[in-house]
Image (cartoon, rainbow, N blue to C red; front, side, top):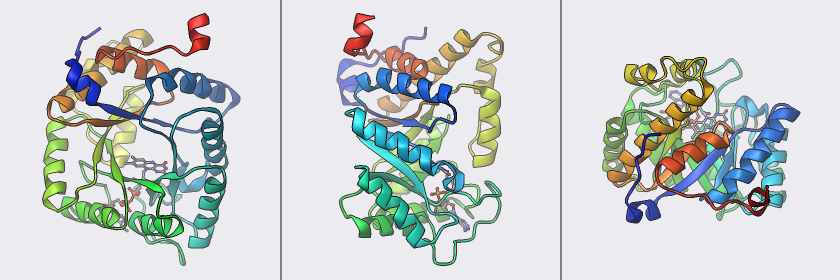
Length: 302
Ligand code: FAD
């Protein structure tokens, strides 16, 4: 195990949020709740639950968020997209989440049903884009806590990085509390992006999204769709792990811990972990950084 232990002062300053996706089967549901009960002991800043493309997981997202709010002490955010729906339809969804106790959202435009890269057209009578959705959410309740997306390598549909950062500036101006980035593996690239964001006058926290790599082949396919690059050196680190899940997971944890440690040394204090609903990847990453988990009572007794 690679040791990238941080000095105690730095370690004490870092804050983490965890992203989950809603389960698609009873087995996946069991796995998610085991994961949640293990990860709660890290006391994350907040957790978030994704919203299937075009709202396809609206019901499982709502039930997952509701259960997190009712059964755990975790501050819980729901992802929400506005693609393919009128304002009234989106607002009705927001109301369902609000009634369940949810006051935190990750506000997104989303992708058209035909997939990433196909031309996006706002729904007639719908929110124009994510910035418009942020304004709509703040109009419903100014106290909603709202995260938005950010793209260190620019969104594939953006004309250029300036256009991309203009959109982030609009989201911040409309009331976004923080941005969570798409995953990236080159910390220099993130720091250059952050410099440009700050130079544009955007002052909200920009929290790096850290991918815990479960499957390098799937990651490359997904990265291709969302405009993130996967460096050759990173791919090379997974060579020979195809039939060795333990080595593959250890490699994923080493990489994530190294990335976090290096960003922390550059002054970054908040991190959003794409958990892939896998507790062992989060545990392995945080343990490499020198954190120790306080086991929940039922796990201590086991
Ligand atoms: P926006 O912020 O509105 O736009 C992104 C960029 O694309 C803008 O900067 C802008 O420059 C450019 N752009 C937007 N529209 C146009 C246009 N019409 N023409 C030209 N350029 C344009 N998707 C889901 O379905 N569910 C999720 O739960 C989910 N969670 C996510 C969480 C994070 C942290 C991130 C980074 C992404 C997530 N996504 C999710 C993916 C997201 O929905 C897609 O990337 C989508 O394509 C853009 O949504 P957005 O809110 O980032 O868009």
